[in-house]
Image 1 (spheres, rainbow, N blue to C red):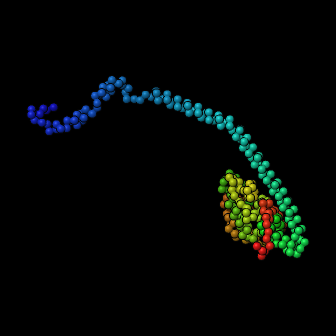
Image 2: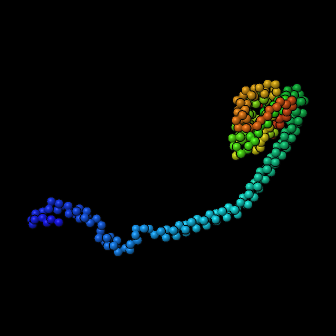
Image 3: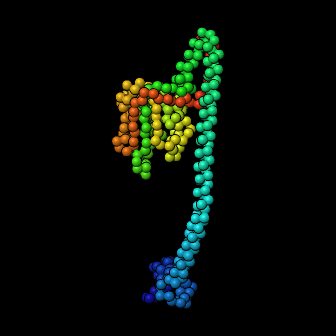
Length: 278
């Protein structure tokens, strides 16, 4: 390095610290430690990595084996509980249907006693006639007469979800029959009223809170001469025809001379008031 004449200051003397850092970027202690470290050729310790990988795979395999064993052992118990639950649901449905049958019988007895009490006077007989008409409209009593019988079912390929009937499809069918002039409708023996709900519960359709299974038999009492054409022109009829044409849904409609639409067991006369009185 060229020495500056005595008594003359270097131009870059004020930058000596910066020049030293640039000339010696690594601390001397680090340099000594680096020189004393055994040389490994710059390659990682592959043997150690392989051992760790084998241990990790062994632990993972053990955990998967334990999980599979637990699932296998628990499968029979889960299947047993599922079957027990299905049995209990079936028993509850049977019990509910029996109670509804008893309720209908008792309601008929009450109506018989009521009719006997009102028939003693002309005013009572007129009132009974009005009650009969109102009960028929509300679904409190069974209805008989000619009409349409529609049987609708899922597509043959049950694995195709698009071919399965939904609650909205059954709603559209029923609404189309109401539009066509139906006076009383039932689905698989359940009378439809203003209080009846058609809903979906998982893969099942419920009517009046009872789960139904396909095929669904819909009875509609009305004028059998005009109902078929009016139903076909209704939005509900067109909806169902679209399902039949595009998704393989199966449906047959026939005219019947005599149909029986049962009463809704949940409807009963609570109180009555003669018209004009408060």
